[in-house]
Image (tube, rainbow, N blue to C red; front, side, top):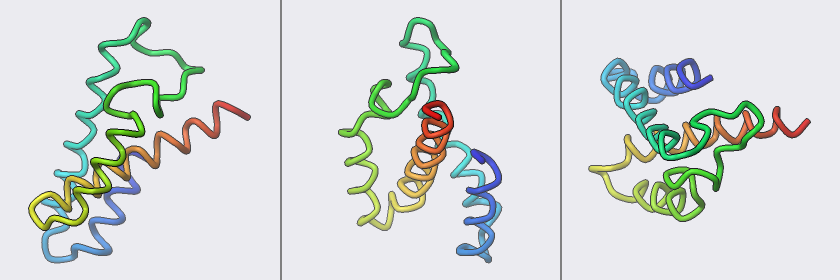
Length: 95
């Protein structure tokens, strides 16, 4: 989902530049570098949302606010898509 959903959205909504937009969406996965600050770095039963600093509610609010500026809109969409797919992962963990 971290690759296919952004690719589909890039292709559907940004037809002329979809490859460039998709690459930017993929680059927003660097937000996961905040996992390196955790011990353990990866836990299959841990939800990232509001656990890691770049996945916090405060950070999500900043990503949402960035939607309203043309220069940051694509990055904001990519970050929010990433958070959305992480939230879907959290729903799977909690079932």
